[in-house]
Image 1 (cartoon, rainbow, N blue to C red):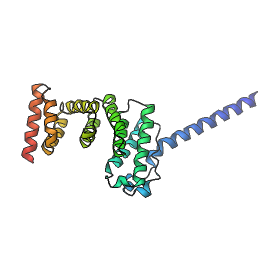
Image 2 (image 1 turned 120 degrees about the horizontal axis):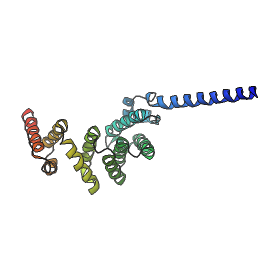
Image 3 (image 1 turned 180 degrees about the vertical axis):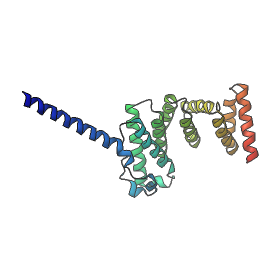
Amino acid sequence: MVMWKKWVAAFCCLLVSAASGYGLWRELSPFLAKPIEQAVTPDAYGGEDFALGLSSYSRTLVMKDCFRIVLAYSDLDMIDAAARGIVQTCADRAGEIVAEAPSNGFAWLTRAAASARLLRMEDFNLALRNSQLTAPNEQWIARYRVNLAETYFTQLNPAARKAEDADLRLLASSERGVKLIAQRYIASPDFRARITAVVETMPPQRQMSFLRSVKRAMDKG
């Protein structure tokens, strides 16, 4: 009986050790991936599978790499099958994350960016809207969402445009956000009417802050 218990204990220790080793391997996978700078050569980077770690931190690292790569490819790059394959892998990994954690707003955003590059505009709109719904108060994500939405503005459906209005109100509620909006206000005439309509619904002090930021940006320009 004593010997049997020792064998059971040893087997359990072996299982725990194997599980720990697997968990460590999974967690380190994002750090062992190819440098994203190599993605400029899609044929050489195509074997990268963007393996996901177990923690939210390591998964965010993968999504940030994917987001940068997806948006770095030009339309001409996207003609290449290898580049499309990389973007598709990023879309798949983002899909895996939101399937397990539907509230991951940045993974939804990465899914939206990948879908836009793959010309899947229905999925793009859905993912962009879900990103805003699941992370409505994360300004760092909202900044990326606004940039992506403005890039594909003509492709936005009514729900996605409503989500962008919410992001614009969020950004206009902080000094840093107002500065970013003011820069776009000056650079993009088509954007001016949209942001003006949003700002006009905000308290007078926020409207004044926005006007001051626009004036300062114009003076610097």
